[in-house]
Image (cartoon, rainbow, N blue to C red; front, top):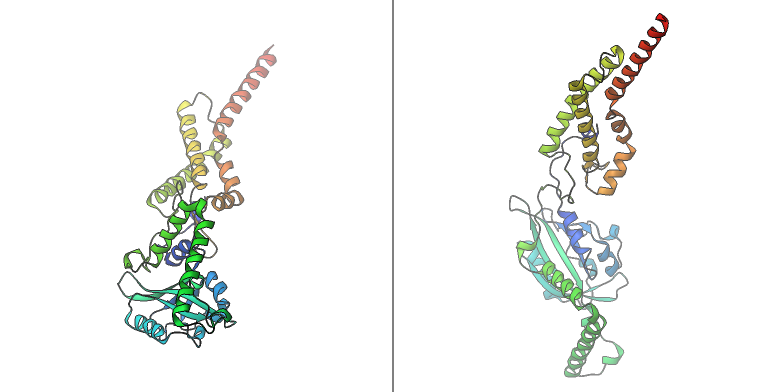
Length: 334
């Protein structure tokens, strides 16, 4: 039985999976994870969206400091970088608008949010750095159209441009205003300074879809013991009955008992289509399609053969043989 070959698995740390799942629905947000226990806070995970907006690939970003000094440039505000350093050193949450530079040295305005991640012992072990691209709301630095303008003129032009961008975005998404409101609330939820919305870096049981059983839950463990006992019963009784043919259709009690055992084996097949298993990488696989395909390719045929009512077939075969023997005896006496 498949349940017998699956060992118990300790609760997993699903922090990274939860973060990735949340940010998949936010196209204009990216994030970095940094180790808070090591000097200079090296980056330990980089999202794909961050690679896209920065121009750096993941190998170039990993193990660099989460201060992102490699993206600093001529116009990067030193006060903003000082706020980032202070937040990292003191394990505080912080949000700031900062000008960084892509790999091709083009400017990039980002709304940066730094959040410390604590484990179950209330110790900061990671930093979650969230980036949102706000370049469209900022005036390009030293563009040709702004040269020679006064500070007041530049400010007025920046406000006008920001307003036009917002109006354009609103008009483009007006038919789906309900979904956009939901998205904006998700962004506000993720960039909020409230520490309660941040998941903790701790061990927790993986969440499973509805109608999916964890293979190490108490019910499945008890069920597997029942199946094991019935397997031993079947392994002994079926060969015995086939060899000696001492069971007939008149032995109703034994036929009922064997039929109940076969029904339980059939229920076990149904449960195996809805039970998680441990994947090659040690992760708990809870996707219903993957579970069913894995079971069909492995133990399904064997389990199906084991639940067939062989004793019932054998009983009726024995009755038929008895009738034939009786008929031959009658013919012989004549």
